[in-house]
Image (cartoon, rainbow, N blue to C red; front, side):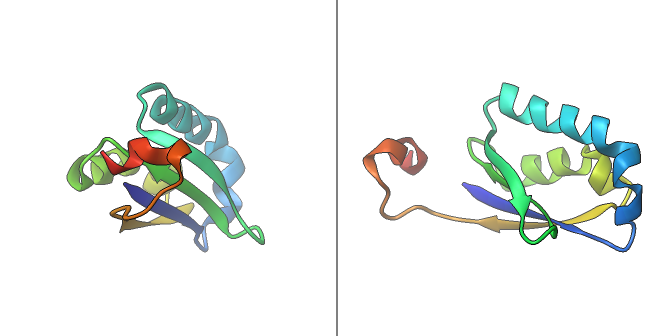
Length: 95
């Protein structure tokens, strides 16, 4: 499982220009079953993704397809997490 932080860069003023493509990219991640959560970093610092069922190399390639990343609106920071203990509602994350 991975937690991805998409932190705004100095180019954040260009976000509106690439927002439609970024949202389509997020939708593809959910449609494929890779993304479990997408949300905003507060206060107005960027975004966060929770990804699973993907290896790091494939996730890195997927992240490069995000227009926000390719256009340097955000920088991506990937953290791999190996769940040790989870609530029963999230037991699928241990697989």
